[in-house]
Length: 160
Image: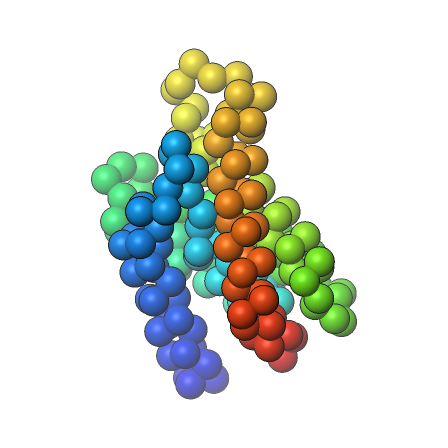
């Protein structure tokens, strides 16, 4: 158990450093992938709901440490996204590319809807504009990142 926790701590530390250091360079018109959501799906697939929710909360809290405002927003969004990922992965026996991408897309959509909905609450946006401008593009970019990760590390996305 301690070995698994240490492995995930190291893995998510690397994900966080890449998210904070490299992903801003990949941003296109304020659209950026979220590597921690991909890691969250990986945690949900391999270890279930409790691990995914706790992982999401802690990863979001760590990501909030690099934020300049709205502390706790990433922790909330990632904890809920962890629940969604685990709920969708609960009865699956085989995780092919399509299943993994479906779970990742749903998780990213929920995560981005919560995060962007709260972040842009004061803005004079309609819900449709928020979804079309921010939620869907960020989710699709995360989906592309998940597809690449699944193709490179397919064994990691198998249930333990």
